[in-house]
Image (cartoon, rainbow, N blue to C red; front, side, top):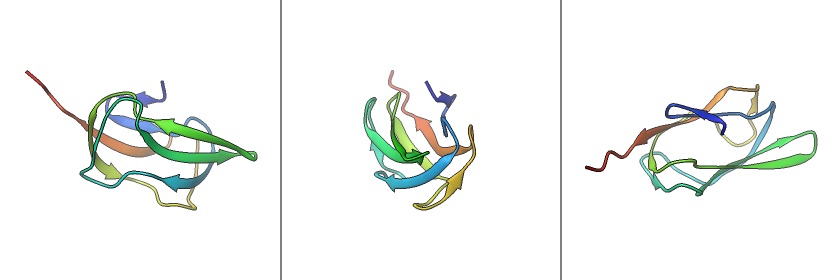
Length: 79
């Protein structure tokens, strides 16, 4: 899994091709977050938990380094 705590990290260096979420959006496990292209291969990043998109740190076309924070999630605490 390429997220630590509530931060979605870039699994490899590459270019952000497509962002499918917006800030304050609720996502569920498995939801499509974004696509990163690395060496001509597209890698789809999915949410690994339920939460709200707290902050999107990137925009389409950005070049990112491995482990760069892409999206900050806020977990939904259900009692």
